[in-house]
Length: 263
Image (tube, rainbow, N blue to C red):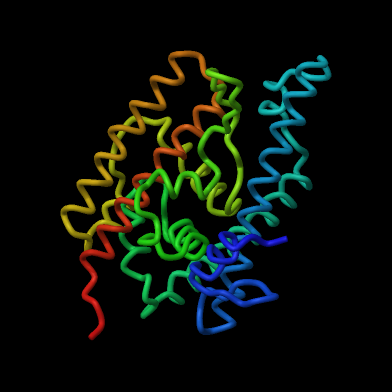
């Protein structure tokens, strides 16, 4: 049964269709394009997780050395077939990527999408997905509320005076949580602004750029610190994703503040 709070969350998203899939754009074709892109991203993430699991299980049972996988050389026919499939997949993604970027022109959340791309690991596909899934950022009075909404906060169990924290709750929007987790991996590298990031930031305000750079400095340092402590990489990534959600809220709110209100 849907609670009143869950129903309100649904109505506060970019589009709400009772009894059906939420509609994020006025044009059904654009909405379908977003759904295809998000489904493709989900498939890639799932495939990567499964491959990682297979390699870890095989290595643990001594079936093969992971280095042997990297050293494997397929025959000429297999290599040619792989190359063709790779090029076809890249071309498809590029077509979807270009169409999705063009589709948000004039969208009321276009300034927020542009501002979020100042953050490392957030290009337009991730930015559009986050805005479409989260909706109005202004409905969250504090970034911790957004973190909780996305299920990125630790679960708690209490007994008397004792409070024990466990794994993240994983409540809320799984798509947005996955997007943030994927973006968080970028912060395992030293802070820097690449050429593509500079191009995305070209038309953005200085406050938005400053927030993005502050996020880089903090999150790269945090990732390195967690790694030095020996924390399992996936857990470190989730911790970074939680803090990244806070910067998403801050940057998005700044973009809303800078956007002129319609008369």
